[in-house]
Amino acid sequence: MSELNEKYRKQMAEKQILEDQASKTKKKINTARTLISSLTDERDRWAKFASEIGEQKRRLVGNCSLATAFISYCGPFNSEFRILLQNDYFIGDMKKKGVPVTPTLELTSFLVDDATVGEWNI
Image 1 (cartoon, rainbow, N blue to C red):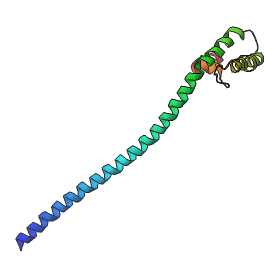
Image 2 (image 1 turned 135 degrees about the horizontal axis):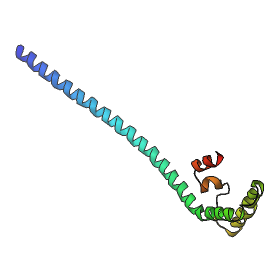
Image 3 (image 1 turned 90 degrees about the horizontal axis):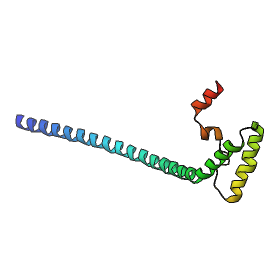
Image 4 (image 1 turned 60 degrees about the vertical axis):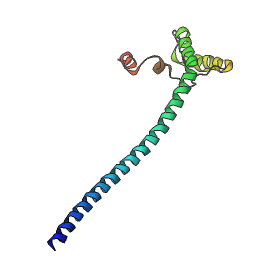
């Protein structure tokens, strides 16, 4: 009888070890599924980001042309006339010639960083 009890105890211990291993494996599988799901979301985000970068790259020549025209020709004028030149003349001319440009380009942020603008305001 004690021999059967001993065998039963060993079998129960082995069963517990197997259940613990199964539980750990289940946790790893769930963690892997979560990671895969997160990576899928990241892939979509990166694909969108890559598309946006490609679009920015496509408009870079036009944006740089707009910025250089603005710097070259708009310095002595007030802000209202600068905006008129930028929107009506410069951007309009680029659209006529088929040069891709960002129509809502904020030239200040295109040309300088926020810290420099902050220094100007001080």
